[in-house]
Length: 103
Image (cartoon, rainbow, N blue to C red; front, top):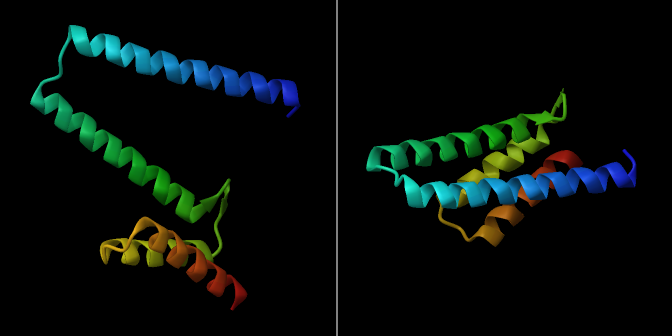
């Protein structure tokens, strides 16, 4: 990918993101969401984030990821469930992944 096409892709993505945010704000003032709609949107966001996390954990592009990545993510999840700070969670996941890859 050339630098020009990359810059164009970034610009289009930025403009699209801004347009979606502006459209959401404009629509929110005209048609307020009910409690049921807010719950559906909240669940949809959670499902989307989990889907991205699972896909990133088990796949590296089109190929399956090595064993170290899911092990590191699992260690990070354990640290998060133990209510560690974000810095500690990231460090635990990174160190676990590094140790598994070195082993």
